[in-house]
Image (cartoon, rainbow over the protein chains, first blue to last red):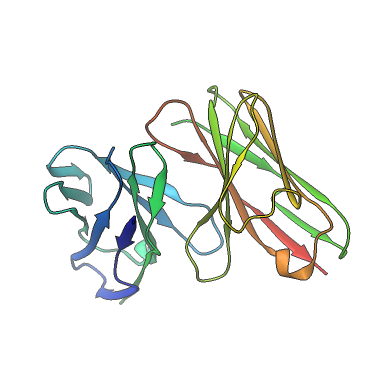
Amino acid sequence: GQNIDQPTEMTATEGAIVQINCTYQTSGFNGLFWYQQHAGEAPTFLSYNVLDGLEEKGRFSSFLSRSKGYSYLLLKELQMKDSASYLCAASDSNYQLIWGAGTKLIIKP
Amino acid sequence: GAVVSQHPSWVICKSGTSVKIECRSLDFQATTMFWYRQFPKQSLMLMATSNEGSKATYEQGVEKDKFLINHASLTLSTLTVTSAHPEDSSFYICSAREVEYEQFFGPGTRLTVL
C-alpha cells in the first residue's frame, strides 16, 4: 500500500534549527513535496525534490533519498512565524499526491 | 507562482440546503483539479479528482451524489454540497494542476452548516 509517515508534533526554540523527517512508500514515485500550512489557511508550497540530494532555499532546505524512501525538511534560524503544520506529500506513478498527516511545529521563545 | 482562487471564502447555511463552491485557476489552464476536505487538526483528505470535460473520480467513501463536481472549463471547477448537514461542516480546499508537477492550492472555503 501507499503510506507517508512523519512525526505528529515537534517543538523547537526560536533561532534554532529543526529537522522534520518523512518516510514514504508509494506505487511509483514522481517527487516529494513539502507544504506549510498555518491554522485555518490552505497549504503553501515550500519545496519539491525528485532527485537525490539537498535543495536549499533560504532558511528552508529539503533533502531526498529515493533509495531509502526518505526526505527531511530543515528549517534554520527559526522564527515564531514558522509555527505551523508541515505536510509531506509524495507523488505516485499517476502524479497523485499521497499526503502525510502533517507535523505540527511549535516554536517557543 | 500560479494563482488559484476559491469563492466563497466562507459560507454558513441551513441544514438541508445546497452550497456551491467555485475554484478558478487565474493565470494558467488547469487540466486537473482536486478537491480536498480538512477537519480541524487533521490532514488534507482528497475527495475527488476532476479532469476538464470528464466525470470526476471520487475517493472511496466520498458520496458522488452528495458532492457534485463539475469541471466545465480549463479554469473552473465547482463543488456542490447537496442537502448539507452539520457533519459536512469543514474546510474545503481545491487545488489545480497544469502539468504533472505541482498542485497550486486555493485559499479554501470554510463551510458551516447549522
